[in-house]
Image 1 (tube, rainbow, N blue to C red):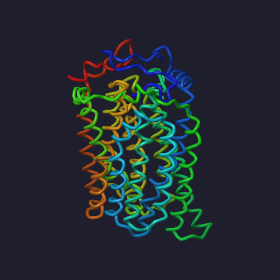
Image 2: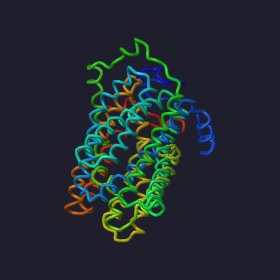
Image 3: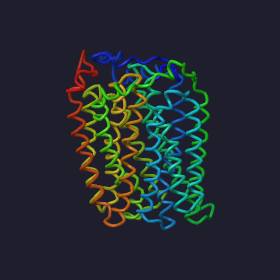
Image 4: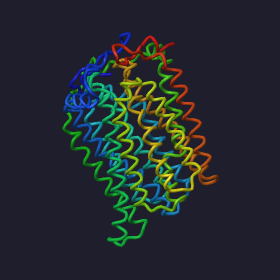
Length: 447
């Protein structure tokens, strides 16, 4: 990737046998390492995190409300699945082009434009009612959000050193989950306010609450506009990976792609339908579901903040595998319980464990490739997730409509287990411990 796009600190390359060890070592407590890492964050990183928080509120708003809004209009699960699939299709179509575009463009305009287009598409989805319009706006929104997502990991790599990088990846993911807490709680509360105080019927209350959520995404353009951005030089714009280089690294790319694709495939069967799960199985109101999503965002945030300490003890590979496997029993509880108390507890713990390893996995995938490869690899990871959702959200909605929630949840469990096993097999030798710290062993990637 280009070195000077939004870059305060030049990252280390990926050509050494092992990555540089973390400078914040064993002499400090976890809280001291945490505080040092926070102080080392660049100004660009802090501005990006503020924008991510605001855009995350919009994302949480649509995640909680949109499916419920459609159900209030008596739209079936299979149609909802097709709309989710359209959004994933748009994201998948843009994943690789976005990665290559970031090689030639300043990052700040991309962040501003993607935030605006995504937010406007959400507003139009709430405004229009025909299924064909929803498919179109969902696809456009998916395309726009992809540019934001693909830019994230390379941005972190270019604006951090190995010392604070694990903290920045965790903060980036944690900021999205924290904004999810605010967005979910606020969205559910807004529906109640519009109904009880405004006197609007349920469909309109959900629609107006979606409109409010859109405004946060628009405001995200403000901190993004303060990012210090440099135009790539001609040499950087011409710095494109050759096919020979890609072909020589194809094995590494596939090892990173396959487990993430399987996790995305499993998630698409059930995760975007969990708000409907609480509505239909337990007859919960939108306000109550908003509280559950608020709680799960807090639990996920705490989990991601704890991830660096777990990585310090177990290493990145074991952290990803162990946390994913720990989420499995709670998915089983969600599948079969008839108790709202058990369902909510399982909902919280499943999300906390499953998402705890995501920033760790993203950090690892960026460390095992060179700077020039980071955009391509991050785009491939985005393609793995959105491409899998293109299929599984549509099939998941149909399965739920015809057979209920148990079958898609069992399929999700099987795919999660397979992904964890493959991830461990692929990368168990790609990490070694030196001087009490886990570092990447590049020679182990091909073993």
